[in-house]
Length: 231
Image (cartoon, rainbow, N blue to C red; front, top):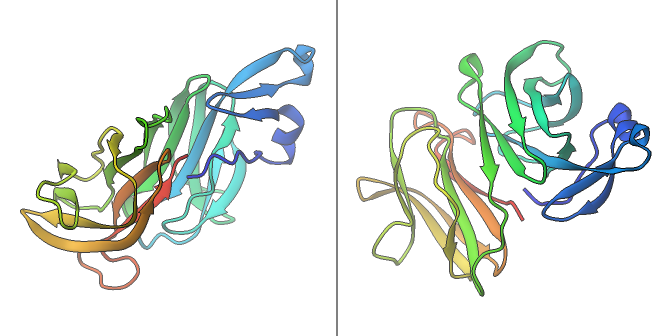
């Protein structure tokens, strides 16, 4: 999820204009006589296998649509309690909603998870503080519906990066060495279930790696790994 801030909609553009893209996002509302107010960053990630394109919505404003495994970056939002939701593309009926508490200067990822009949939102606060010197940061989220717990490992290493995460469980961000071509492995009881090869992890950047899909499928909705850049 790259931190290139995008605006809400035509209505929101009038209300909220972005002044800077930094670790905190600053916005200005005309009614406040140009006194700056802090905003939060919120991004949606489609991790619901077989659901099809979805519209994502904030405070009953349609923001954009996205397809399976895709994210569209962070959007600026006023801090406080916001109503987040998703609907099938061009539908007026929510699939699911959640009240999200947003803090000024903080960033959040909203993952649309589970299958169509039981769609849910998983909201994670994103730690975008810089990695240690000459390091990158990664976290792991298990978004593969079911009862399996998974480890995330790097091929050629003795111990997994993260262990025993069940569906909707996640880790904190951890510093790792950069590499031009990591192969990440999703493991269960020491057995590699799927691999994600040739992934470049760059110094100073922050990533989320997530388990996706269904173990019962062999198509594009089958078990796999995805990686996104938070910053």
